[in-house]
Each structure stands twice: as C-alpha cells, then as structure tokens.
Image (cartoon, rainbow, N blue to C red; front, side, top):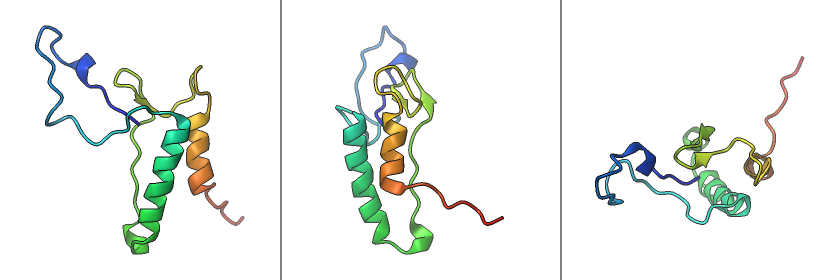
Length: 95
C-alpha cells in the first residue's frame, strides 16, 4: 500500500530511509497500480502449494503512514474493489 514512517520519527532528526521499519512498498500507489500488484501476487501464489498460499495486505487504517485500504474521498472503494476483482468474493457457507 505504501509506508511513510516519518510521522513517527523525531522531526528534528535527519530522516534517512533505510533499515527497519522500511520495507518493500509501492510508490505512485493508485487502485489500478494496487490491482496490478495483486494480480502479480496472485499469479505467484497460484504456483505455490495450496497450504503456502498466504498473502498479507497492510493495512486497513494506517492513515498517518499512508497505508490504508479504507474507503476515502479520493479513491472511494477503489482499493477494496481491486482486491475483489483479483481474488473474488469468498464462498458463502452452505446453510
């Protein structure tokens, strides 16, 4: 989703982007770019053993760090729609 930990740093210190908590993130993030990344992740997962098909997506509401899936006034439901488009809806349990 993206990550900017600078709001959690001492603002008077020089901010250097290296080491923890910096990790692989998307830059230029949009719902369309997110969907493309999810499509690539799904293709990779599909080549793995079913027991190893796990994907963690960060995060529902990390607004301060710029890493959130919640609907907003700019992209609406775009990020959630991207997940649905790539992974579909979960099967409904039989009743």
